[in-house]
Length: 122
Image (cartoon, rainbow, N blue to C red; front, side, top):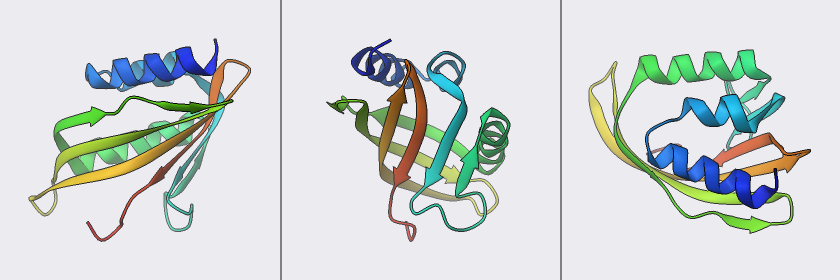
């Protein structure tokens, strides 16, 4: 699969509310996921098992009221999207809206790296 097709599928599935299908069909088993600079607990995850744990933590801690992924910008084997989410932090009850930029790298027809950039004080 080419980068453009992978980007299109990821955006479409996420905007339909299916966040699991991209991991199952588009991601390499050796995928690396980085939050901002990759420093701190849970900010760097490698492989499906680590990504799964990260997703479980997210579901335990946040209720997502709505989300939207922008059209992808594609350059060679990378693409980027803006993700907007309206969430409630379950432990505190605090509701907030956040935006992040997600950058993906594709090799051999699979996503091998994702990195998310956002303000941490939001």
